[in-house]
Image (cartoon, rainbow, N blue to C red):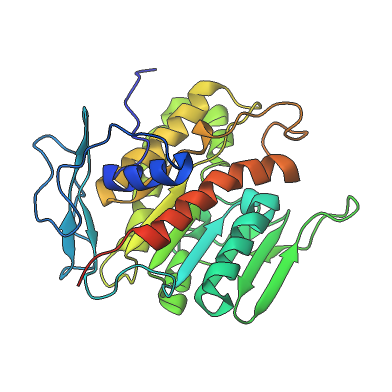
Length: 306
C-alpha cells in the first residue's frame, strides 16, 4: 500500500488550541502565520478547502505550522461559535455506548438540552445517513437525545434491542440547523475494507465526499465540523485502520473540517473490551477525556471577533 500523509488536525490554529487544552502549561513550538480574522490565504501547495463554506460573508483564517500547511477554514463573523451554538452529534455503536454517554453528558451540561441533538446508530456508516442511500435499520442499538427526550436502546441481558431506522443527515441538518456538527463514524468501514479490499476505496471516497456535501453544502447552517475518527482496534489490521483514517482526513482537508484522530489517544488492549472494537466504560471514558478537552477548547477559545 502506498503510504500517504495524514494530517492530525486540518487547521493548525485549532491544533494549537487543542495542544493548549491537552497539555495545560506545556510549551509548544507552534507559531501561527496569521491570527484569527486575517485574510492571508493558505500557502502555495496547501490543500485548501475545495469551496468556501456557507458562511460566504465570514472571515477567513489560514495558518501553517512548521513544515505542515493548513487548509483554509471559513467561519461566520455574524454568528461566532460559543456555548449558545446548536450542536448535532451523530455516530455509530461507539456513540450508542459509553463513549456516547460521556460526550453527551458534557454537551448537555455545558450547552443545555435545547441546544443539543445526539443520534447514534449501531452498525451505521456515513452512507447509512445519506438520503441517497437506502434506509438503514440498526439491529443492535440506537441513541436519540434531543430537547424532546432521551431514547437509548441497547443489549440488555443478552437481549437484542428492537430495530430502529437511522435518520438521514439532510433531515437532521434541516430540522436542527446546527452551527457545530460532530461526527463519529467510520468504524464499520473497517469491515468493508477487510472484506472487499482496496477495490472498495474509490467507492468509499465517493461516500465520504457525498456525506461532506450533505453536511456542508449550499445553505448549510454549519460553521464548524469536527470528525472524530475511529479509535484503535485490535480486531483489524493496521492498513485497514490507516486507510479509513486517510479517507476521513483527506475528505476533511478538502472541505475545511477538523479531524480528531482518536488513535493518537487510544490503544486497544485486553483490558479495553472483549471484541477488539468496542470499548468498555473505563476505556471509553479515557478516550472521551481528550475529545471533551478538545471540544471545550473549541467552544470556549475559538472566537471570531465581530
